[in-house]
Each structure stands twice: as structure tokens, then as C-alpha cells.
Length: 257
Image (cartoon, rainbow, N blue to C red):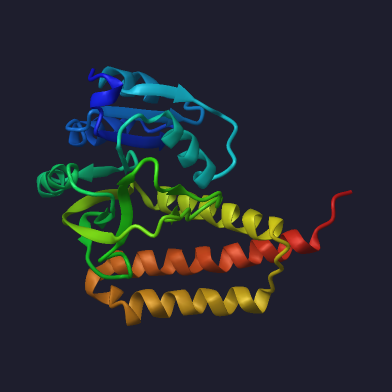
């Protein structure tokens, strides 16, 4: 392992029960000077898999949302640059070279284009592609906010934002059950966050947002060009959108006994 002063790039992940996917992910990011894996309480062999790749593995089960967990993971890193990825993502050779090419440059936030694989095909429409997300940034100049879900990278120093060539592959759903359960988790976390902010929902709002989501994904974003997979994703995502607003409505109308 390189000394702390020599560390240029830290690959940083937050994980839970990802033993089946983690090895391929870590293989794809083996060019990093260090790999940091923060586990939130896996019941499988996730930590052992991470350790087998020489990763620094830490466990923190005090789950307060994705944003806070990413902050904790970043605090464990030592590199000048942080590259954030998830266990179901893979760095392509072209993206790897792009990352290596910019490490000696000045401070900048770099976005990567995520290409998702769903049920037998890459999704190039349905609002899933292009999917530009900030993932490479200077460790001491940027970091994630406290949002429970759909966390955002903060840029307090107003660093320039640029884009890297090469896709970040995203093997996002294993099955329809996985799709539905993952959508339900994100919907619940969204509703909790809005409730904590004092927000309220309505069933009318839930219906309108759900319908709007389907129209946007399947028609406006041409999800129909992604075949049956595009229809499936649009239907489940519109239901999840309805569910999160409905969940908020229920939470604000339910009083503890």
C-alpha cells in the first residue's frame, strides 16, 4: 500500500449485503491508490470480499441516510481525489483512462455518464441515459450533503465542473422484486426526509406526480424505445413516485398513540 502522502486517488464505497456484486466492482477500480469500503451492517460476506481486495473496511450501522453515510466514508479516505461508486457499478477501460489522465490536473469536479443494465439490455432512454453524475472530486474541496436519499455533491468553492468520456456501467436491478423493493426503500427515505422538514403531502399530489413520472419517462424521454424493459421501468418508477407522496400524506396524518 502506498504511503499516505503518495495517495492520489481514493475509491470510496458505502455498502450493505453486496457480496455477490462487490468483487467485479472492486476489480474495475483496482487502479486506485486505496479503496475505502464503509459497511452499514451486512449479514453476508461483503466485508470479507472487500478485505480480499486490500480495501480498508469499516463498519457503521448508525444509518442516517445516504448523504451522511457518504460523508463518513469520505472521512476515512486519504487521497487527494475521491472517486465515489456503488457495488453495482463498473468502471469501463475508457473511463479508467480518463480518470487517470486528470489526476495531475487542477481542482475540478468531474461528472461521469452512467449506463444502466436492466433485465437483459442497456437502457439508453427512459430518463436513464444520459445520466451525468458527479463522482470524481478533490477530497478537501467537496463532499455530499445530509440528504437521506438522492444525496447531492456540494461544491462550496465553486470549482469548475467537467465531464469525462467513457461510461460507468450500472447493473442496477437483479429482478422485478429487487426493482420494487429498492424503489420502496428510496420512497420511504424520501418521505421521512420530507416529514422531518415539516412538509405535507396529499393523495391528489401523489396521483399527479405518479402520472407525470410515467409520461416523462415513457413518452417524453422515449422509454418506448427501450422495449418491454422501458415500459416496466416507467410503470414501477411511476408507482414509486405515487408511493412516496402517499407515504408522506399517511405520515402527516398518523399520530402516535
